[in-house]
Amino acid sequence: MPKWDVHDKWAERMGLSKEVATFVNHLSDFPDQSQEFRDFCEHEGADIISQLVSTRDFSMIMKIPKYLQLVFMRQKGSEYVTAWYLHYVLDYIRMAPALTAEEILKRTEDRFEPCQELELVKQFVTENAAEIVHDCRE
Image 1 (cartoon, one colour):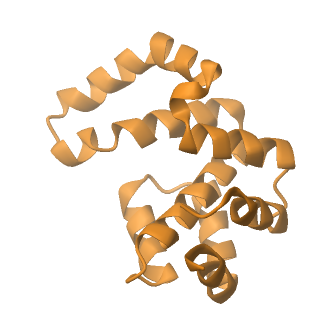
Image 2 (cartoon, rainbow, N blue to C red):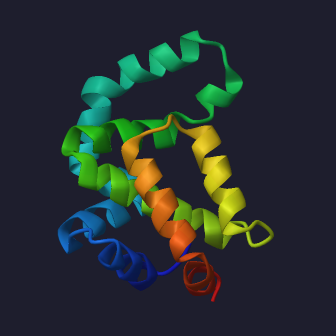
């Protein structure tokens, strides 16, 4: 994963608030330490997981941890969802050095449902791909 200063730099450049970026960084990297997220999972997680498991779609079941985070972020608002997608993409760029930014964006789009926030992140990352890839893989 890129260091948080890399996440912070790109969140700021995207116009996301420091408060939101910090919250998303902590949740993404240490979800078990967020009491708010733990409460959400206790109250709503079982229903969400049951719905996903009932599909018997293994690829969907593998999405459960990130899907829970995304549903939780949706409840907090659009800026949180945007920051979450940005964090996710930056981590993916770091973890998959053989892939281009465009390939990572395509795989991210294939994994999650289309939405305005993901479109914003895709556009932003595409416009800044060379510098983002450099920062994430440094």
